[in-house]
Picture 1: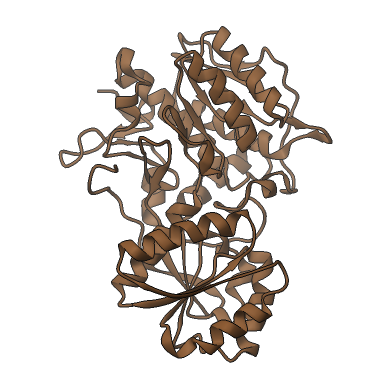
Picture 2: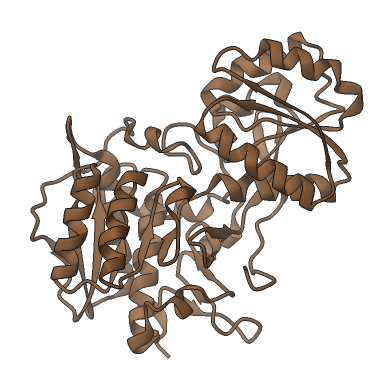
Length: 411
C-alpha cells in the first residue's frame, strides 16, 4: 500500500476498510467551524459563483495545457473565462487542482485542463476534447447547464463525471455532484431538531429556486422524522412581512421555525421576526449553510439559532497553503476541485482497471476530504458529514460535530 505523500486519500481502518482519506483530513477533523463572510459560501445558489472574490491568480491557459504527463488521464473542466473576461472562480478551482496534484506527489497521471467558457456549449466541446485525448473521468463543470451538456457527451462515451453544480436536477447515474447540496443541509438540521425534541414546526421560505428545493426536502425530512408541519409561508424577496405576521399568529403552536434564506436577505427577515414579536428564544430558528456568514451571525433575533455547515478547518488549512503559493485567496469551493482531483489520483493508484467504475465511486464507506467525510449515491447526489452550529454572541459554536464516518449503505 502506498504511504505518506503518495497517498492523499489513505485507506481507513478495519471498521471501514474501503474508505479513502486525503491528507487534509487530519486538519479538517480537528477544528471547529470558523464562519467567514463573502461570496462562494458552500450551498449558495449557482449565480453567486461568478461574483467577485478579491484577488485571485487567473493566468493564461490554452486548450492544450495540462498538469503532469502520466498514463492515467483525468479531465478538469472549469470556467476559466466568461463573456466579460477571465473567471476568478475557474482560476481558483484550477489552482486548487494544481495543489492537489503537487500534494499527491503524482507522476503517474495527466490532468487535461479544459476551459468551458462558462457556457453549456463550451462544456460539451471541452468534454469531447478531453475524451478524445483519452480522459477516463471528467471533473467539473460548475454550472448546471454545463454539467448537463458535459454529461451527455461523457455518458455516450461511458465516462463518469464528478461535477460541482449545486443543482441536484443534473445529478444522475454516472453524474456525481461533489458540491454542497441544499438537500443535505435541510436533512441534517431537521434531523437534529427532531433529536432535540422539536415536534411542531413552521417554514418561512423565499419564493425562489433555492427556497423551492429546500422546501421539498424540508417536507420530506419532517415527515421522515415525525415532525408536524403546522404552516408553510412563502414570500417574495424583500416582502416577508405578511408571511411573518401569519406565522406569528400560529406561534403558540410551534416550537421550531425553518428559514432557508440567503445571508444578505436575513437582516430584513430578522427585523420582521422582531417586529412581529416572535419569541426566538422559545421558538428554535433553523437555517442552512447559507448562514455561515458574519452578516447573519451578528443579527440580534438570530442569537441562539441553529444552522448546518461543513467544518472549515480543512478549508482554512488549504487556503493558507494556497495563499503561500498563489499570493491570493481561494474561492470557498476550491476544496471541491482539490478533493475531486485528489480522489481521482488516489483511485488511479489503488483500484487498477476498475478505478472509476460505479462500484468504486459508490463505496458506501465514502471518502474523507478537506471538508470532511462524503460519499456519492447511486442517483448522483451526495451525502456529507455536516456540523450543526449555534449562533451565540455574534459567532458560531459547534453543537453537534460533523460525523467522521457513515452508517448504513447510503442508499
